[in-house]
Image (cartoon, rainbow, N blue to C red; front, side, top):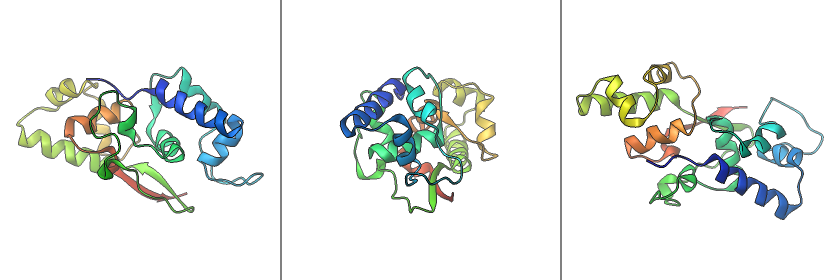
Length: 170
């Protein structure tokens, strides 16, 4: 199974940044949807965005904000994925006073349902997905998840990542 490509995400972010003549600080401000000189609740930092170049794992909610800025689906960064831009894969529109996050509890519920339907243990599910078995129970608590793990999970479920997002107050 091919993973979500963080280097490809970085390349897309950098290409958009260069095309628009922006600094990484300006990119971060736009990703966080903050006007120049205005602060607020902490968002994605410029070093987090530019650091995608060398990351092998990235915090899921931050990546969602970057994907929204690029107007791209998570699936569009999975080489060979067949539903790159389908309507069901598109991330939802987000009002300015909200932020898009992964719904880890919903993700866990879908995993649990699929696990039961397929009569599998959690260890078997984790092995098939390619994640540590200890990582799956944490989803039930609503903890954050990261890339590429979350994409491995949604691909195993055969559902778009956008289905497991929710809007939250900033």
